Length: 456
Ligand SMILES: Cc1ncc(COP(=O)(O)O)c(C=O)c1O
Image (cartoon, rainbow, N blue to C red):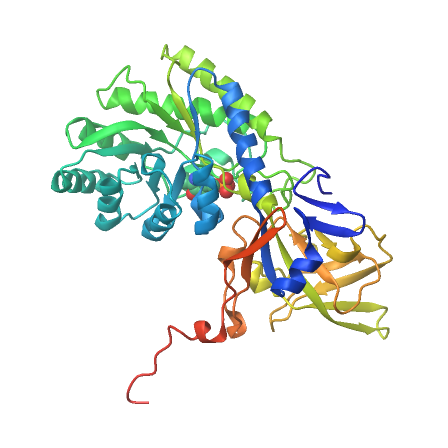
């Protein structure tokens, strides 16, 4: 299951996170806790960048990891050190990225319903504004004028994917239909109007185009088609806006690349494995080359951007939880429940479907011990808590540590305070060092925003 050369690996019977046994981390920091491997993150980031740069020698490739996938200042510091840009949504992510020392030149202010304040802050620090609605162009012009500083803008398009006969993994609909239905991105008419407005104002500089369709499918035909139709849509928008022949400096194809061990996209299309990132890069960059040639647009100096979230972060993290109690019954056939000291509400899952397997798992301190029984791994809230039903495990006792794998993207940020439970913290590991990068919440913090009106 795990890459034996990876930073997260099994040695003898112990799950190791870099040079520390998961069991020792659990002892030192307590459970439940999220853990992230710094060196796995650095390896992933370098591999993704190289995969695309190898396939696009004509220009630069810039990686703008999506902040939302792992919204920690320390994680952002690592990515900034590695020279990566950052895609942000809203003022809070923007501030987090700045505190994480992101180079503002490589910072995107993205997202829907942008406020005047977030646009002004973006322009002030020199970030790019990714336009999602026509009203944002007016705000950029006004704020750029007020600040005496040009606004670098990109237009977020909805590429026309109607020619692709591919069903989305998210819903039983063609990807072309779903990507038009989903709110984000400029409707075509607004994109044309936005391009015209930008060209008519000195305060705004159009540096490129953006799209993000998400993890709709692992079918590489989609990814090649996305690039082809994105370029077609750019050409149509520019031609209609009176900018015929304009070749943007930057094309950003967003994220949505499935991580190597992707569980949730496998559901509807079972059997379909996530392609390696090199395969995405090959399919996309060769489509880019041929589509630019078809439109007789120059390839030289075109900067390609991608915004990985899951594919960068998912396998850098895991969740450690202790078996707090074993319950069993023989009355209706043998049933065994290992009650874990974590909860599905910390894992962003509320799975009542017994067939759902959202996590791969290991008994961290018995990682190579063969399974001898099939039991339910359940959490502690008063919700359904079917974290993993019918899990094959070795002999398990209270005190054993369960590792739920691949929780590095989107999981921790979806945890909530159901049952007024304080949320777990996150520990970063680098070789033999380990340190909190997000403290565990306290009971006082759970109630910190509460107020009692003075009539009570
Ligand atoms: C604009 C943008 N870029 C990139 C991403 C990252 O997507 P993923 O985690 O699927 O790679 C997201 C996430 O939804 C996004 O909204």
